[in-house]
Length: 237
Image (cartoon, rainbow, N blue to C red; front, side, top):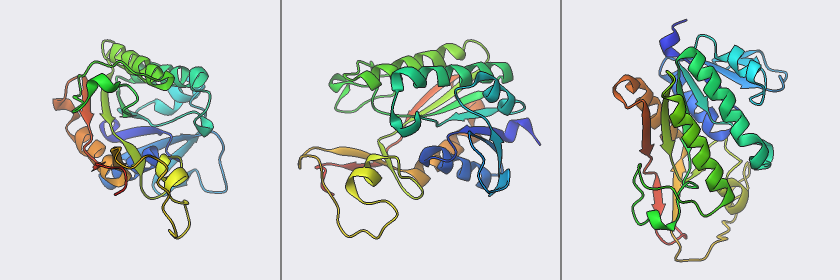
């Protein structure tokens, strides 16, 4: 097993983590994933080696990360709740493991970091003045990752709009617009018409991450990219 082509995915049972894990496997990577509870499936399932552990437990993350060159941090608090308590401790555990392994941290980023003053075209290095509590947490999360790049870790942050796509239910599209797992009989437009919205199709997003990782040695130690995705100019398309 080559360390250069071995990745640990935190959050592989979710939308972004699962999509990135799939694209990495297709590209020939060895993929490990952390999961709190093992189910009836084998520890090796669909080409991914599942390791029992919790992203909130530093020892579990460090153990799972041994021998990897990439750690994909795609884990969120269960139910998307308790951000104040869980988000930063989880990234601290990932950072500690990445520093120990001299690995690259991959973060599926969001637009929470930015306020209205970053519009109309939000650049990768735009000032981050968030207007929400979660946005402030995201800013601090990225700050800690950047600090880790001064301790032999590297980082790749790919920021995107709202995710949608197969096997992804913990997002605005699947929870508010259509009913996940069922034939589409209606589409609910819960926002005001005329307000634009940025979307990211998960398989495309994951392929972009995999392609960037293929040339990560040519990127800056703290590399940031914005994923174009799909712009719905009036929120009804």
